[in-house]
Length: 450
Image (spheres, helix red, strand yellow):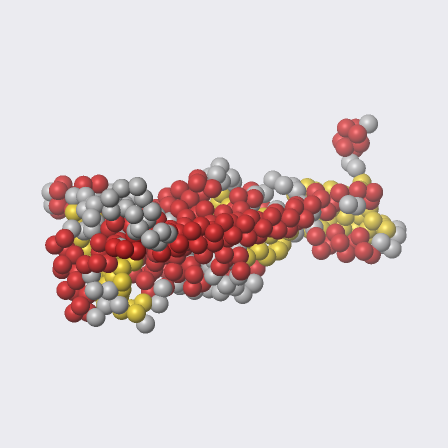
């Protein structure tokens, strides 16, 4: 296990407060006790410590052991090293004493900053995006997931290739620019460009196959409902609780990378496909959103989104805003969306009571509480293949028809008349339409059809 030194940076010149209710409550309490300046500083400290706690979870998910943590406050970023030369010297000493194998920054580093830090520090330096890409590479199991991770890694790596001295020489037209020809740096760039083209073609093939599969599914009116949410909000646990699919559940971030689809039946007997998707996170690297577009197409094609949130997290409101930012980037923010507040088993009774007026569905994926109410809400939101109520008279000899109606719809009323079964049935319009020859119209319906 690698020994890691974490660095979080708080730029006080562009201070940003947490919009969560917990943060606002803390700020109000501090304003009563201290001056506005002290309160603002305390809220900012809370913000950066919560971000550092999330970063610590990322590092643990990557399989490293945290040896020390450093918080650096600056008015703005240092263009050469992000944190300033004095802090770099301090980090070098701390890394040497802690025998750190890697220094991880909770911030994206420019190619120049990364090069300067690697020269000044005694061990490897990684930024936030590199860490997330490494976690994705660890958790990718399918060929599709591995292709998408490799594409994101190479797109991130390309502008950060470096070379020095004679290795940088090129054929040129001025003094000091006439070198032996193509450099190793240029060779690496050309090789990466070729691999990027190949990866994009392979991922395009994946998208085409997925589109064909989706087209076949859409020929039968089975709507898709997608689970979306912040990483570690409990989506996979909720997916298992609803479908009994047995997919991997883990408290580690980004345990789910490859989309999972499972057919299931709602209380109305309507069939849907439930999709479990990759979790989102604050400052999700743009290369990942682009690379995982083939996977996230399940979100784009879904009829209803279930936005799963960890209601026990103090940063719940910030997490919701980050997820909505990614949904907007995917162009699905206007889709019907049900807010699902998960992990209610971790809340005290008074906090749980305060959530009931928000219009969200309260569930515990761990205990199963609220699952029935959630499925009923999904039934209400679906507009494709609507639920209708109709009357039928089916000969008792048509056992296959009776079995199909009993399995796919709710029998509200049933009577045996001579050799027929008269029944009032509630179910999907597509199912009931298959047996329209047995339908009995009421007086009002007969007037309309006449």
